[in-house]
Image 1: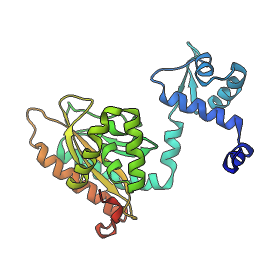
Image 2 (image 1 turned 90 degrees about the vertical axis):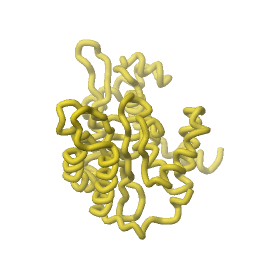
Image 3 (image 1 turned 60 degrees about the vertical axis):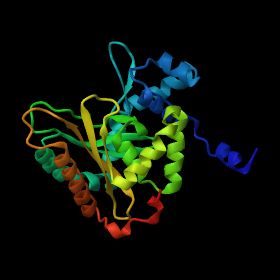
Length: 265
């Protein structure tokens, strides 16, 4: 046994690990799961899972449907993330500017952050029009499936960026031929404008938001839905997204000259 493995063995917390396993499983599941399904998927006995699930339910991290006895993840973790000071700062700065952007562009807009190898929507503002496309607050997506994820990926420090690219390609091998070039294009263009990979008729207009250290803190996106009667076209909306992202970045303390060389392709 190596020294690292020995240390990991000494400091293991089995009950905590089981709880995290349950949370991560429910987070990745598209539908509620029974305790039997949870235990089977995790390779655990019902006895191991039962008390942990009850404790998570009592603390509000998971919820049980009283009719089916199936469990789902609650938004408790999402709420905790919003109580984190950096997230609070980001949202307090971004939301008023996003309201202005939605009015100016006549489109909805959303703000996303990285959550591991996924994208998490932490803020969303509806368009002022009766018909619009919007992404649900709290929704999560695979990193390279969205323009938000691709833009944040592009602006990661080089070593972290490559690790994330490798992970994306490992899970979706067909991206091997397109993702590296997509990243290069984003860095040249300063963001991404492309048809949505998942919703027909929507064009994503995305720009990075930087923090005071010059690192990417979030990505701001207008999912542009062309409609009759719009007085704003996609070019004008894209300009508004870029300006708003710069305003949010500046309010977070970002200065262009602080961007580090690690963003080089």
